Structures are given as C-alpha cells and as structure tokens.
Image (cartoon, rainbow, N blue to C red):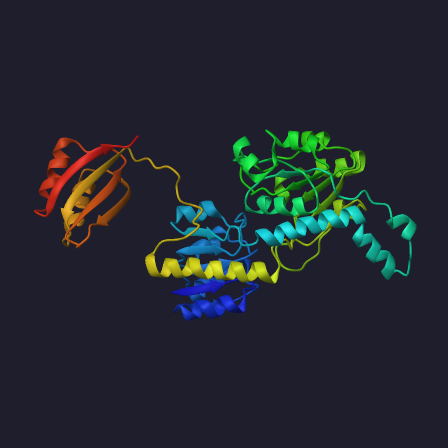
Length: 401
C-alpha cells in the first residue's frame, strides 16, 4: 500500500508506516496543483494531510481510496467530492484534546494578567508595574463552555484546579450528563453567555454550527468578559465579535481566524488582532509534541487497519441512513458462487443493493448473507433466488423499519 503524506509528519509515524509494509511518499508542503501532480505521479492508495486543502481535483487525480486528516477537524477536505467517488475520509478525534485545552487556559491566564503586553514592554525597555498590576484574578469566576466534546471535557478539571465553576451548553449535553460532569447545564449558548465571566468555545465546524455565535450571543455576554475561541473561526461572526470588543469591553483570546493562511507561514492582516484587547496565536492549539506523536500514532493505526481488513476507523463520510426498504436474508452453505448467483438474480430484476454483509458460522460450513435492497423483490424473484444454487438453505425478506 502506497501512502502519500502531504504535510509535516512525525518521524515515529513515518517509521511505523514503513514497519507495517507501506511504501511512504513523504512530500510535506505539497498543495494545490502541485499536490494534484504528485497524486497523478505516485498514485497513492492513501493520502495523509494536516492543514493542506484536499480539493476535488486532488481526489480525482489518481486512484485514492482513503484520505486521513491527521487531526480532528476535516473541513479542509472536500468530503462531498470524496463521497461521490467512494473515497473514505477519516480523522483522529481526541488526540489533541489536552493540547487545545492547555492553550485555551493559557489564553485565559494571558488575558487576565496581560502577559503578552508585559513581555512587549520589557523588551522595549519599559518597566510599568503600576499598569500591569491591575488584574481581576480567576478564582471564583464562572467559566462557560460552548461545546462539551473531548476538548470541552478536558477544560472541566482544569477549571476546577483554578477554582472556576463551570456552566455549559452542547448539542448533545443533557442535564443528567452535566450533573455527572460536575457542571451546570444551560439550554442555549445565550444562557451560557449571560452566566459566564469567561466563555470558551469548543465546537466542531458543521452546517449547524457555522455562524452559530453572532450578535445576539455577544450582546448577551457580560461587559468586560473574556471570549476564547480555539475551535474554528467560522463558528462565530467575526464582525460581531469586533463590535463586542469595541463596544462592550469584551477581551478575546483567539487561536483561529477568518481567512488565515493555509500553510505554516504567510502574510496575515486582520483589524481584529490589532486591538489591544485581543490576544491571538497562530492556530497552534494542537501543536505540541505530545499531541503530534499521538496523532501520528492514530494515523498509522487507521492505515494499518485499512490495509489489513479493508475497514476504516473513525470514518466520517458513510451514510447515516440508506434508501434500503428491506433486507434479503440468505442462509446458505459456505460454497463458491452462491452469492454471485443471488446478486445476478437481483440485478436481472433491476433492484439496487444498498448494503450487504456475509456472516460465517463456526466451522465455516454455513453463513447468512444480509443484503439490504432499495425495493422489495416479489415472490417470483424470491423463488429465483432460492433456486439460484443448491447450496441455499433459506431465503426470506425482512422489512426495514
């Protein structure tokens, strides 16, 4: 199996891919038309990327079977185009959770004690203890979490260590789960904004979260509150945040920005980061040695499982539901050609197969095939299925509810 890696990747991961018998083509920095040409040239089975955008021309350039996002978010991959071509897309969720939570708390502390401004003044030869001694302190203030997935949950014990009570909202959070986590449940992002002194956002970018936090959200925040975003820039209205900074004294710690450079370096201009109330970092939330080693190991695991079984861990683009209306259950002896005959009958009847599996029983004498069909075969077709092989023991139909 040939694996093309188009971004920086840990040496431990490169070594492990070779150890499991993969041919590794390591081309960090490949992107755009250059990556299209590389896919055409090397014809990889698997493409591994970090921040590189994977567009439809890249997906159609060769014979890709799997794209692995060496990280959690996969919004830089044209998942719809991959799905149209039957290319698996997989990611590495949770492997950078601690690193992102650490940065989020770093931004909280930096905002409270104005750490960056302290450093800049000292480097400019200025001593201003009178100014920089002004800080509220964190103990007893309320942390609000928007999103309580893997990263959001890593924020909770860190908040406890700093003496911060936590209120939280997430699409999947229930009052019962909140009680188990030791946080106060809120039924909306606005309720979190109104109750918190510090709001930290930990949302995946989806159609439902795109632009979720807008003018109403920032208007609901307490004056002078802190706003932290280490998730995705697209989940917030950037202009609304800018207004909140200017008009409501909101102080922001941001690791993600609209229109940020896709690569590791580049020019970046934003009026938002010019404001003294905004602390920005360079989308580095997942970039610790610990996180990158864990992500490399998970990427290797995904490739290994795919290579050995054909299955893909953490796949993100399988259909949640299908058009299947019934399941054809075929109990048969485990002999060559049985299922081929069944599928010939189904094809001749112009019935589309949605999914299928064949389960072998102990001893490898018999099996049961489950074939999910878009439309139900009539009795004549069922009779032809039963007669298609002497090794068929029974064929029956189940309506899918």
